View 1 (cartoon, one colour):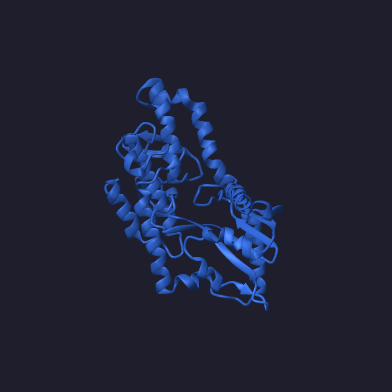
View 2 (cartoon, helix red, strand yellow; view 1 turned 60 degrees about the horizontal axis):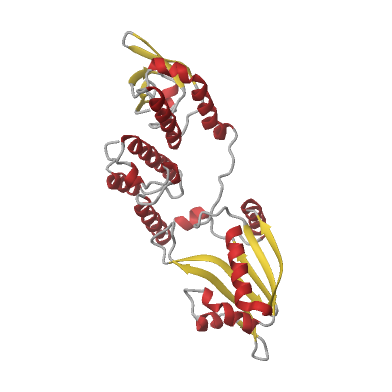
Length: 336
């Protein structure tokens, strides 16, 4: 949908053929949004065009990329797409339609991933160690933010002056997803007496930290076990625990604090400034700045930015419209 006049109608563009039509639709136009995608048939009589059959589901802008991909296949097979040639692709069009509405009919929670693009699965690895001191000496440099003295300053010491408990953040410099981050927290290590526990949020990080611990400590460490917990399970458990605690500030109360709100917007602004030059899987690994150099790529990126704008408007607090405007400006999409 290119333009919507609530209570009257809208201007539609056929994604496959490129044709544009003014459609009279009193009821549907009251809930339609610019960028909505509809599976529909348009019937025109003289200067009047109406919808003769229309899917009840509004397909979100980001799914336009799948339609563009099918259009490319159609063009390769038979040249420019026309109303007549669409009849030859009925089966493929219906299959794509059901693929796109399936998440609407049966929504599933999004797959959560960490900043290394690993699926989130919380791991707790348990080891036996000879002593806190030995384990600490071998692993303390895993923290790139805190040095040895600052880690020890937060440690617990027994009555005999011997180190009894110490925590080590496992970190690395920078972040491949968020270029403006100075460092990334990969996990957390806790050493208590003769027990070492490592907590990470993915299978790959669990494999890495186990190999690292065993290599550094050698025969002074013994692997015991690993337990895992899904993000959904952890969230449910955390909510139950929060219900038993004294109520704290809600998310809405926190973001109402000017300093918190400003920091959040700074993070989002920095993220989207680098997003235009980040490889995007939906763009076949191209960056948005690279993709807009072709007509199909420009159309695809414009759809992604429109989706960003919609999703941002539903955030709490809403995404600053200036951020979306700056993304469009950086990509030359101001008029799209």
